[in-house]
Image (cartoon, rainbow, N blue to C red; front, side, top):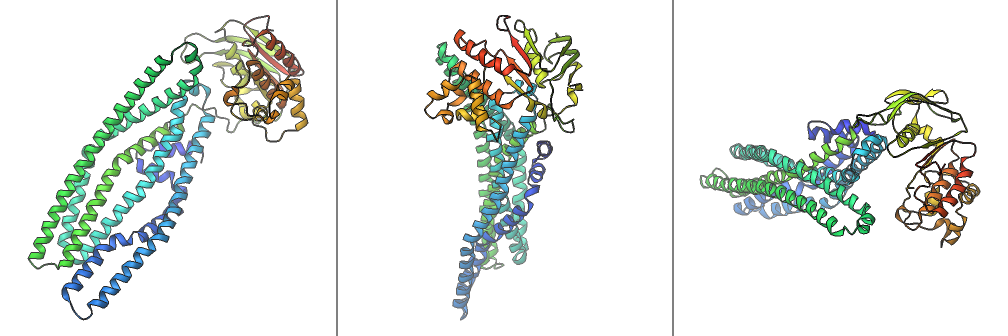
Length: 547
């Protein structure tokens, strides 16, 4: 499922239509699940008919009564027993459909997040994106299951009740149909309020998720400044807002549920009185009276279930809109149809390049003219805010010039597939991003087939031999989340080994030693000297002495 296609499905103004579209690929499983559901539910909608048949047989007391009772009982027993295998099949087909769509939605979100521009990610909170992948997709999954179990089951009961009464006593059918407008009136009365509360609650959930993510990330900073109580109070205020929003949602949902229950209990009691009047007048039998009352009870229960499902539906619809916001986002790095990059020499030409951030009034780069030949090294030195990082982002292709153009080996970079181009570059940043895994995993990140001897050479050239020897399991040692067990200098050398392993044609060193002590800086610089050879290199630094 492409993210663009999925986005188009989810931004539909009608949630039921959007739900139908995202399940289009699962039509076969849904149809089979529906067939199994109808068959497995037979004992439920057949019970009033069986009750009528048994009561009427008892009241008549004729000679064939015992045989008739036995036949009805045996048939109903078979209906009950078939529920076990048919329910299992129903669960299998529905689970296949729901889990496949759940996977496709998450896959589409992951693909889209990889395509979205860095400018979008700079403005987004990670916790909010996490919430969309986890909570919102789960809401759609729950909505899908409830659609079958509650709505589809309720429709089957209503159809069975109306057909059975039409065939025996059409007058009673009119009374059944009155219950539907009552349900519609209740939905229309509460729809706006429940939806507003769902939107409010969704926003609070996303804000809480984002704040928790940020809180965990800055725990070292919080601890270093003794701000634990401040952080706790800030988080508590957020949780209180979430609680209050949840209470408001619960109250309006329960008010809706209690109103529905009271309305249909009154309707069911009136139906009982109406059936009793028909029985008194001799227009129906005792069995028929019980059948009508049983069906109306099931009808009321089904409509009540559908009404109680309505808040769940609104929550799922809001989650579909939430996911649609990401999948339909147009601020993406679009590489489709662009020129492939099969090789890179490393020649760069900047022709009157200007760049301005959307939120800034001043240019970050103004009419930059520059030529860097393949194999040359360019050092960029300047104070914070002078445009060094902007220049590196343009070279990597994270951003495009506001005006002017950048030529790579004589070709405009706007016309090239950046995904393929970046396979020929490596970046050693100021702060190396490592992940939970082994030492080896962090060096070979993204490479499927790595020559062991080449890996060892890169480890040696990055001055990591002594570090690896001290690890309990060598390269297979788990280094902890974000490389917490390594020093700053060791993390930088892992980044250098990672870059060496890729043998890049273009190398970017972005303040690669600025956060290190003198000894670590010397070790890292020795490794960098080996890495720079025969590559086009861009070096960013605050101080000329670093160069």
